[in-house]
Each structure stands twice: as structure tokens, then as C-alpha cells.
Length: 411
Image (cartoon, rainbow, N blue to C red):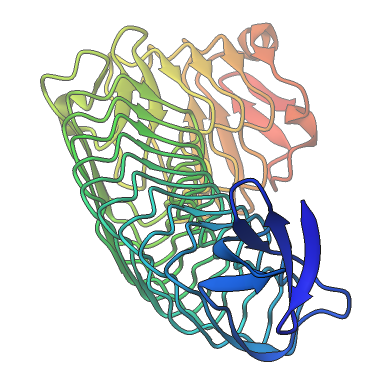
């Protein structure tokens, strides 16, 4: 291999194959760059086939670049941190865009991905703060982790039916993203894929998707409508946490796993429905809640929930962050109230615990700032027999005693 500068561009020349790779140059590159398809060294022509790893990294004065159609690969970090780059062409023939290849190109407003590219690697366009739209061609089958994260002016994205996976944090903090269509080829939406996209209002998850990863749509605060198609099997932890505008959810028959805190903080929910033919969960008696059928445990409630008499457990964080919940009736038959079950229910003023309860998890009523009255339907001795979780006595609630049928007990 030979390294040499030709026309102010540094190349690594492969003498066996007569190919050339553009590489990093001492002092960097600036202004407008034109790369020729062929360069000549010692009388021999070398075909330029790739932009090497870190070739233009942190060339903050680079404004535009013309890449020849002989190039088939853009290396890792090739243009990372080129803050002044406003224009670049990616020719047909490019099959790979490397890790963080264009990350931090803050002035880049538009880029066309050629239909020869098969994968968009990790962080390829992250922090491209001026990029407003992107069209992904039908040749691409996966969007890598963080591929478009922190593209905070990106409004629309078009994904083809060839996409099978959307990686971790792929569109994290795309704060202007208002619309996205997930094609019916995607099998998995990975962790935090659309987390903190506060302008996203509607999402349809097609039946090809089997897994909605943890935090996938967390803090999408304008999301009012979510359609989960029959075919989805799993909803991961915190998947829709903090979707404060979401008013209704329907769980299809295919869902067999919902994490405890999948919908935590969705305090605008008023309608929760589970498909009647779901074998794992139900919303019996139109209770506006999700109940794990096999254990009769309510795992998600909302401000309009009515706990059926057949329920024996209130799960971990079942009503956590239901900020508009003012009252709830716990039926006699409930044996356990889970950890953080009513935590941060800021409008809850009173609660009555039936004699059937055998355990109350730690922090079950923590930060229920208006909870002035806790009533237990049994005696003081029966209350003392209840297994109380750690920190329950130190919960941040106004009520400091439990009213029993024969007197009060300190919490």
C-alpha cells in the first residue's frame, strides 16, 4: 500500500488491484472538494472505490463534496463532525454507510441515500440537526442503532417495505418528527427507537411486528393514538411511558407479554380494552384495565378503572402516575397491593383497604400528596398481620395513621 497526496487529496493506493481509498490528511480538508473517479500515480490509473475511516472527520470548514460513482463504501466516521457541510452526493453503487459516517453534520439539510445501500449503520446520521426529511430506499433492510438520533428538525421519514428492524434509539430525540409509517415488513421495534419524539401524534404498528422494545415510544407526549395490530407478541418495559396525551389503548389477542411499567405515566388514559380472545390478559366486566388472567392480577389501571370483584392482586405500578385518579374502590378479595401500585397518584384523596389484603408493597402510596385518609376495614390486630413493604412507613403522604374498625394505627 502507498499513501500519497494527489490534487490536495490524500489516498491509500492498492498496487495489486489498482484501487484508491480517500484517507485522512494532516491539516484536514476545507471548502469544496471534488474527488475524481480515477487518479494517476507513476503513470498508472487507480480507481477510487472508497472513502476511508475518519477521512474527513472534524473538517469543520468543509462545505461540499462531490463523490464519484466509482465509490462503493463510506467508512466509519468518514464525515463525522463536518459542521459546515451543506451538500453531499452519495452515488449509486455505494452499498455501505459506516458507523457515525455523517454524525454531527449540523448544516446538512438534505441527503439522498442511493438504492444500492443495504444497511444504515449505527449513528450514521445522528445529530444532523438541519436534516428535515429523509427517504430510505427499498434496498435497505435495517436501520441501525442511533441512525437518526437527535435529528431534531427531522419532520418526516419514508421507510420502504424492505425494512425488517428499527434499531435501538434509531430516532431518539427527533423532536420535530410528526409522522412516520412503519412498513408491514418490520419485525421488531427496538429499545428507545422513537423515544422523546414529542411531536409524534399517531402511530400504527403493523401485524408484522412481534416485539415493541422497552422505551420504544417513551415520552412521546403528543401521541394521542396508537394502533397495535394483531400479531404483536410483546410490549417491553416503559414502551409507552410518559405518553401523557394517550387516551385509549386496545390490546390485541396476540399479545402475551406486557411489562409492568409499559404504560406508566399515561395519565390521560380513559379507555383500556383487551381483545376477548386474548389468552393471557383480559379486561373483564368492561373494567378499563388490563388483568393477567391466570393470576387475576390487575397490571394496568387508569382514572376510569373499576376493579372487578374477581381480582386478587393489584400489580407493581398498576396505577402509578395516574395523576387524575381521585378515588378507587378495592374489592374484598384482593390479597396483595404491589410495590409502587399507587405511587404519584397526586389527586388521590382517600383509599379503603379491605380485610382480604395480606401484603402491601413498598412505596405503594408514595407521593400521593393529597391522600389524607387510609381506612382499613378490619381491626388493628388484623392490620398488624399484613406484610408491609420496605419504605411504606416513610412514604410521602399526609395521612400518618390508618383508621381501623377499632381505632387508629400509625403507619
